[in-house]
Image (tube, rainbow, N blue to C red; front, side, top):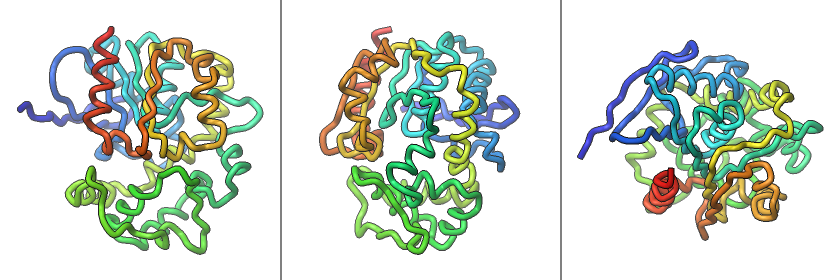
Length: 287
């Protein structure tokens, strides 16, 4: 079996950790780079910075076009990539997060606050240092176990007086997640901290401001969307209607397929790894 090759690539002012394997058409998986540089300022995490990092990666490797596969924030950035630079994308498969068209009247943070209140996790992640202090009260491996059990269909609201430290820790891990997985994630966050990941949330308003010229612009890249019916994102009010009643297709006219997996929650790429891999392969081999 081939081994994964790990390299560090300088791109757009940062060093990005890249794990690669195999030959053939390039597929860029956007699911987090825990060993990459993590600038301390949230202003370094706008959609333009992240897409700039990825374009720089392709340029460094001499790749004109790639397939994109994203999950969660990786999916969000994959949509932005398709929005800004469709010339560099052959097709995209995104998990969990559909395209969110820019609402010129309200940014995402204000929308979540209006729907779920200040205790909604997206809102709680905004104040620099606050959540990091909360996280530091819990062993990182235990925190990982909490996170992997949290993102089901019910909105994740965490009062300050309870904190993430006070959320229930599951008695056991699901079959698709091992103690080895948990310890690996924990070791990486112990090295890098959580600020880099949280800065994606903290940069959302700035990305919204800067993308004003793209308001109403369609994404014209062949696309496939895969989600679990128990996913926290899929169960946000209005998302199912947007996905299935024509809105999504209007904004992404080359959307070719929507797959909803029954009984599956947010971490679909781990929970249903073989099925998701098959869906990705079946889609990209068309091109």
